[in-house]
Amino acid sequence: MNDNIAHLLSKLETGLLINGEWGPSSSGETLEVLNPATGEVITTIASATATDAQRAFDAACHAQEKWQKTPPRQRAEILRRAFDLVGKRTEDFATLMTLEMGKPLAEARGEVTYGGEFLRWFGEQGVRHHGITGETPEGNLRIQTVRRPVGPCFLVTPWNFPLAMATRKIAPAIAAGCVMVLKPAKQTPLTSLYLAQTLMEAGLPAGVLNVVCGQSASAISDPIMSDPRLRKISFTGSTGVGKALLKTAADNVLRTSMELGGNAPFLVFEDADIDEAIQGAMIAKMRNIGEACTAANRFLIHESIAAEFSEKLTAALEALVVGNGLDEGTTCGPLIDERAVENMEALIDDAVRAGSTVLTGGQRGEGNGNFFLPTVLKDVPRSARVFREEIFGPIAPITTFATEAEALELANDTEFGLASYLFTQNHSRIQRVSEQLEFGMVGINTGAISNAAVPFGGIKQSGMGREGGVEGLDDYTTLQYLGIKNPYC
Ligand code: NAD
Image 1 (cartoon, helix red, strand yellow):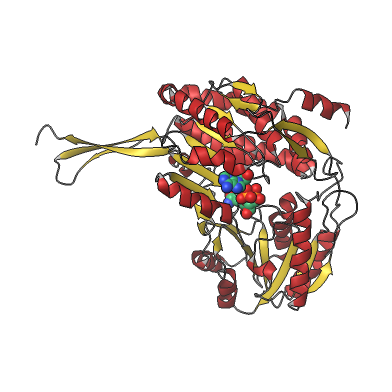
Image 2 (cartoon, protein in one colour):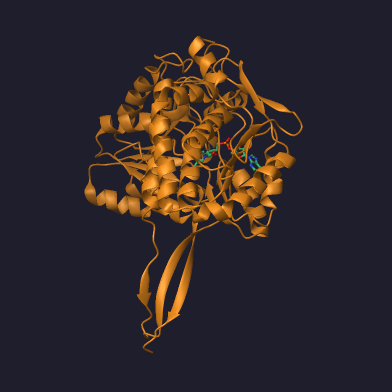
């Protein structure tokens, strides 16, 4: 470990954040955080128990009343100061993310820009988030709607975007006047702890944000989810866990935001600019080592251009440098764990048995880390697991189509509905095809669609609710309608 990293880790809080204080777990248990590029232990953190989770939630509830009365401008200024601090600490945040999650440093820096922006965006939105006034058609009532904070929130985040998934939830909650408990993924807690440290330095009052991470997710979530004071759960993660949380949420009729898995089709029509499509494919497939819910999962390519597209995509993937994300030359880091590597192997075996051909990759990379070579598969039938399941890794399966109708039928043949991509130069086709794509988001001639200003989210089994944009703040408020008798009636 070099001196800079040792210095960074020495200033990092590794306890539980409860009511503004950092402390150990009530059981004294700890949790090792591993570097997926080397298998080495980066550091250990406090591992929360059910008692700690309850304490964290109690602290949040205690802070709710005062926090919601804090003027929006004050809340916004905390967010703005946090945005500035995150920007100043770009290298620290990027290094932590690369260490614990594996993504190359350049991408981790990109996530600091993207993730930090939610702090600024929601600070700006929070001071101009109003209801409406009006009157009923009969003239008997004046209508007034008021946006109120939804109340105490439980925020659960995944390991793949350790900063952005946290700021995408924390920032609108702060802006709206909600208190919260954040439970980061146990693989990548360090970024969240540093973010919490940064928010406290920016002036966030004690109790508004509490952070508990632990070996057992359910030990933390069970007491919080069953507490009648909880008003909202915001979850980003797999569809399986999301469904289980939705069932529990029904008991207390909670507001839910669910950002779940995806199976994005990447459609390239015969009239597309192929080089632009390759550039888009590299982002949509290879950003975050393919470990993104928005990752292109199925390349659906018109048969007349499939040979050229496959050849160019293969060359582009072969040009990537697989290795430790901390090495500046690396463009493809390790997967999160050994299980993910084994899953890539199983998916490729299955596809080959179903008749696909491996054009490049198809095997583990060298070294102790969880490396897997970027892979292109052609002639992938829709029965193959890679077509049906979320891959979450660097495999690009190619399937061809002959007509627009067939392309749409293939694209929509999934229970997921998060991101989709469409490459064509034909404007009426853009309109026609995107209107028929059953996905919450459509990237048109681009592979990069995430931004703090957009309403990010899915339909079907990819979830509900939107994060980011104007809509992302609505999800942390409830609308109260006041019916005021017209004094002239
Ligand atoms: P995961 O579902 O395994 O874990 C997500 C979070 O849920 C973690 O913090 C985990 O500890 C927690 N968790 C697990 N069991 C729980 C339980 N019983 N109660 C409460 N919390 C529990 O997912 P992951 O492997 O961390 O992340 C990958 C998944 O996340 C992929 O499916 C990906 O598509 C999805 N994802 C979706 C979005 C989106 O915006 N739609 C963004 C990023 C990732």
